[in-house]
Image 1 (cartoon, one colour):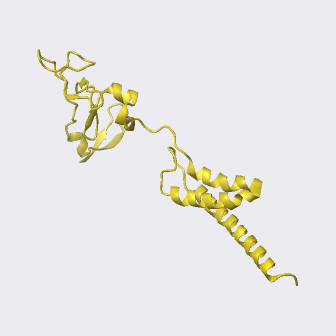
Image 2: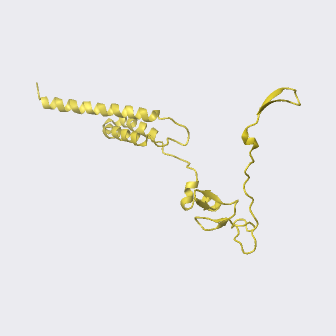
Image 3: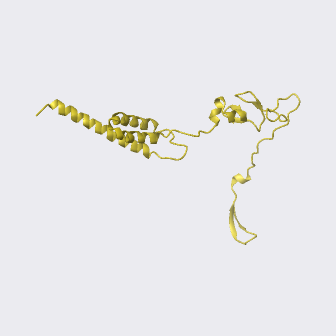
Amino acid sequence: MSEIAVCTTCGASNRVKVFPAVLASAHAPERTEAALDGEAACFDHPAKRAVAACHQCGRYVCQLCSVEFGDQTWCPSCVAAGAGKARSANRETSMSLFDSTALILPLVSLLIYPLTIVAAPASLVLSVMKWSQPLSLVRRNRWRFVAAILVSLAEIAGWTLLIAYLVSGRSAGPR
């Protein structure tokens, strides 16, 4: 489905490709129907027929007002208020940056070096446990986790060598 078309304004020839999606009919949302006497009406639009009840508060909602998540329908008020399970409808606005925490923990503990005996293993465990979780709302990579693991392993190796030196030096006795 490719043809050459000539522009009527400038006379340039253009190749036009029509994709199958253009030929498919667009699925427009259904129009809400007017509520007849005796039928349930939308809480926010009394003239429109209700199609469902809010899973949280029980208000009747029309097709326009219904917010569907999975098999549940919520009204806009409950979604906006974040009531009950409707909290999952709201996007997350903040996240803990575990990669930065895992990197800062062993580096800051170097200022008071005895704390590295606790901070290095804690950083290593944090890095391993949080490796597969999403890093942030914005795109980040895992270099901070890698750096935290390397710094933690270096600190753990330093403590291991120091303890081995102290133990072997004391067990040998005076020479």
